[in-house]
Image 1 (cartoon, rainbow, N blue to C red):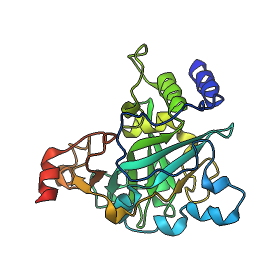
Image 2 (cartoon, helix red, strand yellow):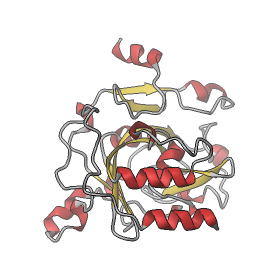
Image 3 (cartoon, rainbow, N blue to C red):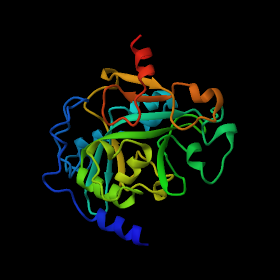
Image 4 (cartoon, rainbow, N blue to C red):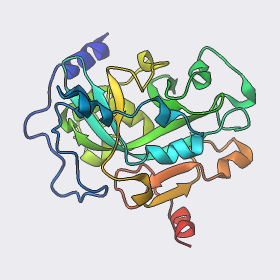
Length: 266
């Protein structure tokens, strides 16, 4: 109950006017959106601006192409008080469904836990790991296939993200989190955006508390690295498949794979 109370308090605190990206960090994804961190295009008065939100057709593609297409797009989380937390997606993992030994849907099995993986593309699949952390996936084309969102480059609402992370993380309570630690991992991302099991089975194309906006650069303009996925050592040959994708040189990526980067350059 105490943790839920702290989370609720954190959601009520809006970022200050000085809540900005650190000046010491170099922009990796081109020019930022000039909309401010408090309100997104999607909720502006001009109905023409609603086109910034990516709809169902974006998610209706195979897991690998969707995992790549996510890179460079902007994930927006709108809290109960109207505060918006924004981050550019810089790392993803593709899970290909029943044939994929690392997927929760391997063998085609459906359970109450993984039902979202078999729902229409764009459905959120949020699950608990280690009994305390959440991870967020988005279903793609094909039964049981989805994309794990692994890391974001924070764009707006950093102080609120820091408060949420500090409230929910375990250990090192007295150490202030660096900006690059806020969303550099799937569970960190969920903590920073206040995402829990209540988001499971929501439609990212229609939800009012979270949505996806088009980034400033086309995916084709990004240098993408294809590497092995993280934490699936027991998945046999599937553990070696290059189904993790990240933006080369971006400091907010959770794990850099030097070997994969060399192979990509070759």
